[in-house]
Image (cartoon, rainbow, N blue to C red; front, side, top):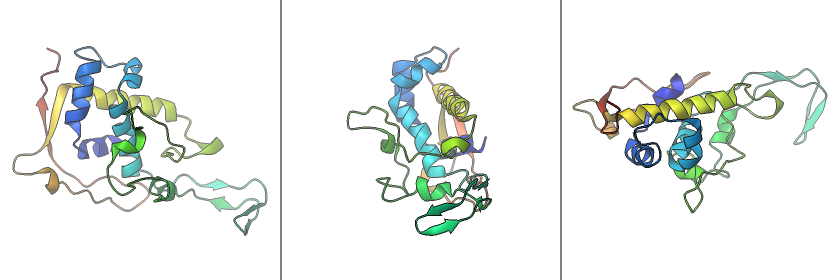
Length: 188
């Protein structure tokens, strides 16, 4: 649910809604639409990259002695993956500190997977629900923006929304108020 709040924070609905209109129309969004909606898929991925909802992953322990970059790590050492270091690595992301869906689009506007995108961790210890979570996030986000236009509450502008992350094991956005206005594509 926290990831959903980050989706709302980045009010990018106009271009996403245009893609939804062109690909899905009035139909119920389905998993088959995802490959035909590269911008929407890029936005969903960028929210996860930029928001960095879980900066520290669950601790692991080494099963054997390891030498890593000149350091000896004995068997049984607890290791906590710092996903933030990958998700905001300036050598891997063109604009790591900006919301930039183009991180996941090639020059033709097609969605591209990024090896450094790992909000669900990496390797053998990756979250077993990653595929399901990605599908559900995409479906929920697409369904919501098919039916509603999201705007800051009356008297607020996009600039008034506080983009500061909380510090902790998870990084939810600050509280803010949005208005969900019925979209012209909303089914009757």
